[in-house]
Amino acid sequence: MLFRSDTNYVPVLDHGFVGLIDHMGSDSAVVQAARVSYGAGTKQVQDDRNLIRYLVRHEHTTPIEMCEVKFHLKLPIFVMRQLVRHRTASLNEYSARYSIMTDEFYIPELEQIQQQSSTNKQGREESDWGFEERRGVQHAFQRSFFNAYKEYEQLLGKDGTGLTRELSRSVLPVGGYTELYWKANLKNFLHMIRLRADSHAQWEIQEYANAMYNLAKPLFPEVCQAFEDYQQDCMRLSRMEISLIKRLVSIDKWNDLIDDQRSEDNVAKIYGLSKRELTEFKSKLGDRKSTRLNSSH
Image (cartoon, rainbow, N blue to C red; front, side, top):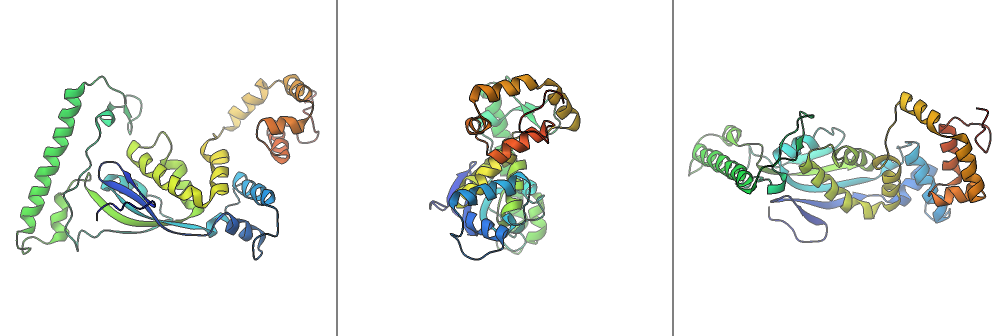
């Protein structure tokens, strides 16, 4: 299928694309589900925003599951195999048993041709390879793909009476492109994004995850902003790391900060926290009673 140029489709890699073709729900739908009520407008917009942020922050995800997104994807088979590991999604893929595969294959860009990482068995790292070496890798890809597809065509036969398609396809490499429809609820979609848009994921799947997220975010702006603030752009700390941080945090410096800014409300405003978030932050540091960290703790 040719790439569609409408605004819901964006190109990815050399021959691929991501298209957002359908969705269900909105930020308001999440709020309604959380309140188990009907209709919008019963609360102020700011209250809706705070509720969404509370749900995401505390992983109360059932209301978020009420929304869905559906994508049309064209991607290399090895990228698709990473996507299908998210088993909570529903998908339907182009059938190579029924249809003939195209001769489109993924050729990495020069800057993505890197050597095996010395510290990560499933990663890559920068190399000092020059232009000619990288071009040589591209040519090796092209030769391999050309020969594989030529064998595929010969097995099929010119008149279509050769080897069955379901067996002929087995000679094709995983660099070939496939298409599929992929649908998930918003909670599981964001979980996929958190893993596949991460810098530790393979670069190619990162490109698809970022394209999918950028198409979906305008539909759920408050949920996505809360996702970025509380999940995507944060980090998880172990019990031991938390204990160490508590030892490193100076109680006196905390109280000095409060005194310097004149109130906890000002501190919360400066750092983009709600009053409730500031209270929760202090609890994480060990203060669950007073409004100021107690130096006797």
